[in-house]
Image 1 (tube, rainbow, N blue to C red):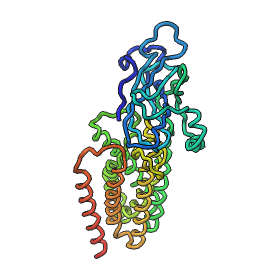
Image 2 (tube, one colour):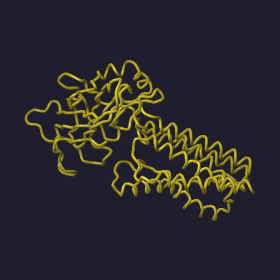
Image 3 (cartoon, helix red, strand yellow):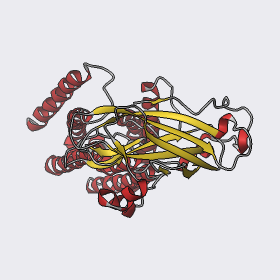
Image 4 (spheres, rainbow, N blue to C red):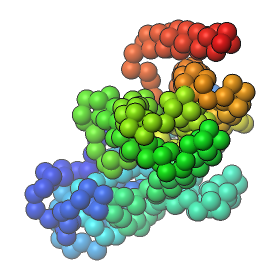
Length: 388
């Protein structure tokens, strides 16, 4: 759900420097975040609410410029019984410094009520957030002259539930695990670690480029932020294959041995990487009142959600373990079949997991078409492997 409204009359990008705002890279520009904590109630059906944010820069004498004030409304979907919800407004094109911000439900009749942010953070179900060292953001009190908030550089202006750099950390860890698994399994097939890395490293780099390119294609080129945002596994597989196949031909490594070792390596890496998605606020599940939900954020709304990232991580772990067992059972000659089967099984599992996410599907026929194709490939792969 997109925000309604924006900062009041911001200056066009790249013009001037009102109020001391410095031009520069997008990730270094000053950004103001303000978080309003609300209670959606305990009973009833899910409903939409509008949260109003207003703010002005503190200590400004005389008339306020466009960059010294803002008004913003955020429309959110609330689920009664889901516990405290954190709604964060991210205000750009503002002057750097201290601000006074007010926020609260804007549309009567009000079914929800504002919560004291400090009390929420100290008590009850939010205590473990503090232990996990998640940022408090700029919590806005429900009453008074306004809560003081300070701008931060865009790269560090996070909402509660989002940890800067977490995705990169998990991605690097997953990649290291994948390379270790690949080297060990190829060593069992008589392939040295040097040859394995000579193929794997270019495949990983081109796979990362393919993952970003796939995302840009899906967004029709309308993307912003860091290049590491919005990486798609489909693009990674395509890019890695484009680099891996020539690498195998040049090094003389048997395709079956490499593909079989790559299957568990890739899915173990994905199992680790999906944890980074949870702490970054991407690939998130729908808000829920279920006791199995986990409090997390999509970068704008923090709430109890279906743990879609954790479920996909578990699916990847199980697929990787099954691929490893199949490789040890049938050996390197079945390596290509093991990799194809693992990708088909993941595609099937992913279709069910996508139904748990908050984002709608882009194509109404995506689910039946993808399920039919993946199931056909998986069944054929199993039958062909079994009759060998």
